[in-house]
Length: 193
Ligand SMILES: CC(C)(COP(=O)(O)OP(=O)(O)OC[C@H]1O[C@@H](n2cnc3c(N)ncnc32)[C@H](O)[C@@H]1OP(=O)(O)O)[C@@H](O)C(=O)NCCC(=O)NCCS
Image (cartoon, rainbow, N blue to C red; front, top):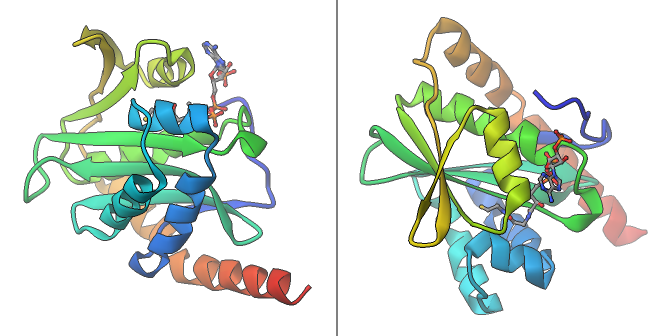
């Protein structure tokens, strides 16, 4: 989707439940302004730490971009309710060191695929009206944008799942454990260096 290629040295995959701390560390590393934009208001470290734990909920799927074993960008898909239904919510975070490389655009493609495969008909993205960048990314996926209570709500309608969309996600998921092990190895190498 993006004309940019994210750095070939990193990889995109789903976060494992056992890796919630890596996700928390990423969110805590966001600079003050990015954190405010991500949560639509200023939040404390404690709030972020508690929030990160929701990544292990059965109704949440988190895609991560890792570089040298460290999570540098993430995209979250959250269902609304106890089962996957017509609506789900998405959120994105990219650390400034890897910003403007097309990562959020790329991650959005993964989120839409996962939403599609779970029968989601309306993917909602809440962001501050000033967040032109996120709105630009949503528009690339034909999102419909409207203002609600001063914030911008972007709505994306994923296509109905089909054999190819299911096969694509299943194929990507086969590499999660391998990539996670490689990330863990990279972190260990850094620790001993
Ligand atoms: C918003 C955010 C996720 C974008 O991540 P990113 O990886 O840098 O985004 P990408 O590189 O995929 O795409 C950025 C696009 O926005 C465009 N853009 C950049 N600044 C812009 C601006 N001020 N106005 C409009 N578009 C802008 C870029 O041109 C690019 O589009 P292009 O690929 O067609 O050139 C990241 O900046 C971030 O984490 N922000 C803080 C948290 C947040 O805002 N989350 C969204 C709310 S949930």
